[in-house]
Image (cartoon, rainbow, N blue to C red; front, side, top):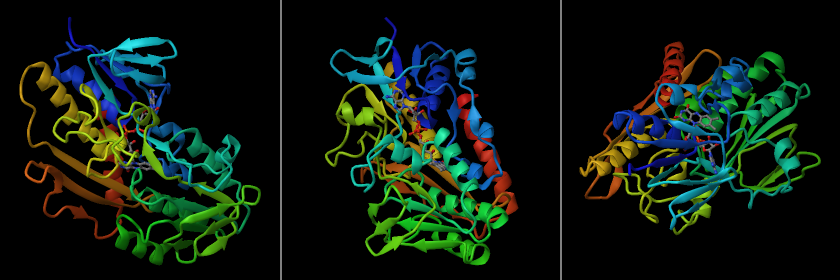
Length: 391
Ligand code: FAD
């Protein structure tokens, strides 16, 4: 019988690996992709929905071509559990057997140390908007309805978290919105890290030049309490009154990966072989994207790169070939500072077989300053990666 691959999660990692497994097997390998959402909503560029220069519809895309063009079997369902012995996943509509499993379930939120009511109502009132979709729309509505002169606060968890520059791009977008519609309002960034974690000199300069008095940045601000009635936030060194509160909680690998016993000894992220992306804990199970402790940034571009390395590893194995021993991973991450200008960081990483770790290539790239050209490039980057995974 032919091998069957089941992919869990149709985000940047899962959709890419499903498509490339089909293409690189000359459309022979049966691939089932399981995803609960009817449509894909992109986190990259979702901060522009807050700034007001992009509607949610522009970052909402169809899975249709994966099915019609690439012959992926798409199952709209949630995987509830994985039986590693029987090699099947359990869903609400029945079990699905696999020979190889790819788990690409992204992140889950760890509210254990977030001092706020542990209820769904509190979490809806203080949205993370760190998975794009309804949460993004919710946060945008709250910004639009904020009182004149109100405070929009963003809490940033300690690294590692999904998309290191994302919270600072969000601060720019909210400040950009306020500048036009609510100029006496303020963005308060309560960052648990000791400083801006990505593109730091660029953000600092941009805020000084364009958002003076609009963005109040407070490093080392580990949360100690949130009053869910008033939105008052306490950190290790201050008390802050807020009108809109965007709590970005600490993160872990997707809950299913944790429940399946795929986490490493620290219990938050999963370890893989960097050449095949096979789990260190379970044979024939591969992991991709933000769930993995990969020595690489948690980004869509990296998840897409890892998906190709993983697809190539599975195809090599099915053909009794050795996988490429020195896989290369690329990352480019753009941040928009308003509706019209963006800036980037770019790196190439290679697996070092002696160190058994990922190393960054010499150089890498960082913009001198934001520009209109880079906003054009950023839009092209997004269109290209969406097409690469879904088109
Ligand atoms: P995801 O894309 O989140 O996909 C996981 C999928 O798994 C989801 O569709 C989910 O529904 C599904 N799933 C989960 N559990 C189950 C289950 N039990 N059964 C079935 N399906 C399940 N990255 C960049 O490279 N560039 C950027 O400019 C950029 N900007 C960003 C801006 C923001 C505001 C944010 C929040 C992130 C940004 N990122 C960016 C990061 C990027 O979105 C993530 O790194 C990327 O989504 C990771 O891909 P993934 O496949 O691991 O997870």
